[in-house]
Figure (cartoon, rainbow, N blue to C red):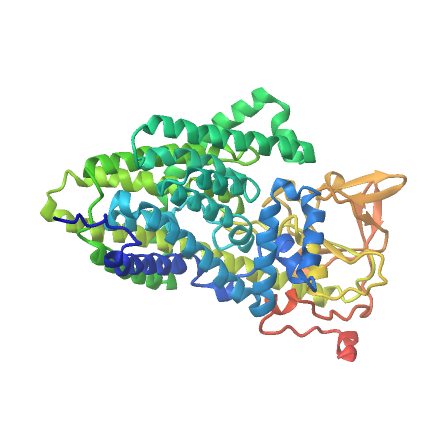
Length: 575
């Protein structure tokens, strides 16, 4: 009697070594692309709220309380997101600072890449599964992967989505729906993608249509329960989205059409950006090394073929990928689907697995036009293309390093130009022009002072810094000459308040406001005299002697790893 061997897969002993090598190669490529320059990267935009808040609390319980202040009683309807994210941020920064946090972010990316690789290993075969996993970690429409708040608070939802796929592929539909449901309380845009699993995996028995309908109905029931729960808890974004049903339908249509179009364009244009970015730079070395790793991975997996009929496997992958792409945008009702740079490019995270399948499926179908004996040439072609994407992503890292340097320079200026800050001092400065890839100043800036420096417990409120001109980003006069301040302030009961764009309204006390402007050489200087606020000549805080000792808090050594001397007699005396 002849025994039929089990189908090849990552769990088979004869295939474990090949799978492990491919996974290692993909993980190395992901690290090169997104974390090569981690030693020079820091916190950006929402990082200062979500990561900085957690860093500066003495325990994780205090972190949850502070995050609840920002997210609201319902934690934006994503309680698991804040549990996982806060724990990752607190543990990693407490043990090893930002470097360990970035290594943890790289580990999350590698884990998700491994889950995706395992998911498509049998349907596509080793070689094409490796290609799909490389596209998964290098998808160019999303440039937010190196940002810690995205890695800790968003990517765990991708983990649950992929676990849902594994459960479905193994014939456990109830477990698949449960894992998908976890995305609704982590980061909900990943949830609709789970509806596409029946398109990717053959059912273990007959009745594929019935199985797909039952799966879809179960997901729909979970979604309805989640929507009602969020509305009951008063989660404002859900209430806003559900308020106008016709507007919601129009928004979803825009998401599922404009999102894929914008993302598809990056697959064409960003390899060229990578070519420009890698000219005689460290990125060139990273791209070349990545190409070698990719070639090694393809060589190691060469000869693997999809289970079943090759054409059918590629077509199924492309069809499932296309559905996952569309579904990956359907839930992002509060986002701009055309954003392909910076923090908000995370709108493409949920569709990344779909894009990897779609690109690989179409490439597999196209490769059938090449004679079988000549298909080996496709490996270096794919490696060259993906190496350029590595170069592009390294250029993103370089922009993040530059942004962190700009933040460091600004706060060094605050220490030198504002030694006389006191309770309730408001520091204003023109918002800097920025690239699409990295923003150095944003809505969280007012939190940074209290995270960098110890503020006396008896002070009524800590000093706060606010960028001027967020509505004219890049068009604010660096010296603020002739600037129209009327859009920045509001008057109430004879007092002036700063209109911060997230709702906070700090009091502007005469003689307790400092304005810092940019000089022609790119430096900073402190203004004196008055500025036109509220129809009056508002007196600025006159420069005075040292009144604050700038004792470091936990963010300080992360931003100033080399140390930054504070030229303040008070600070020197306190030491």
